[in-house]
Image 1 (cartoon, rainbow, N blue to C red):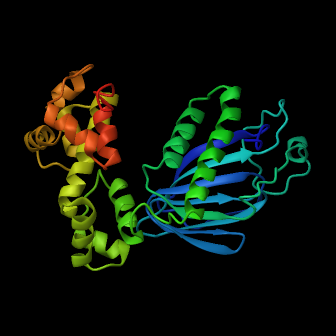
Image 2 (image 1 turned 90 degrees about the vertical axis):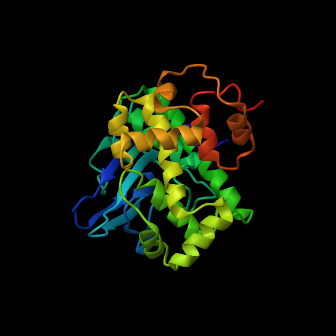
Length: 316
């Protein structure tokens, strides 16, 4: 890749609009990646409004104008990354200029770099577990820990690679991983694992009937919406068990299970081991029938969650 050899991430953060009203900036001097993790609202870029729901992603051109208009009851929660394509090595101002500021030396030394594939605002809808969003979340988390300069200059090329991969998939006709309405529901589910959600809310969110919601889940996942949500929560539980020290009872409550006993029973049914065994495991031996189910499963999130504790046996 010949682009962004001199680029740098100068700001990366999560932003929860909460009860905030609209927010606007003009002539923002950056290439800006922003995506909706939960909530909904409208993001207007250079006068063009984009309706955003979980999984909505925008990649903005240099010197853009932007207005955020969060939904009053379900405000936007976004991830955002500012990249300066051409920035001197000695520029240590860690932010993007959000207005015309020619009086600052850094403002006059920073420049854009032409990207033929991204000459205007790029908008798409992706699964929240997509590679682009996983990478972007990692960039934000590392940036918030004051990561070294060389890493800030490595991130832009990785982000651009994933953006080009998404663009390439869209150009090849892969508009969605699933039908648009179902993909929207899946993103809503992934953003709602720690809150209540049912088929009625899914129906309203995706603007399809409740029977259609059930048909889509039966067709694509051979299960009901409620059971699908439970499985997603169990998959999320694996990460919490392995990556945090939260008590099992707290994980159960956080993920909306009625009791720790019910959580443990469903976890054992799904994974073949108990939550405690999952937390203790390093090289855990799983039942062969479960391993076979993992190898043949098309549910990538399920495969990934199992890989937390037996990564060396999944590819056998």
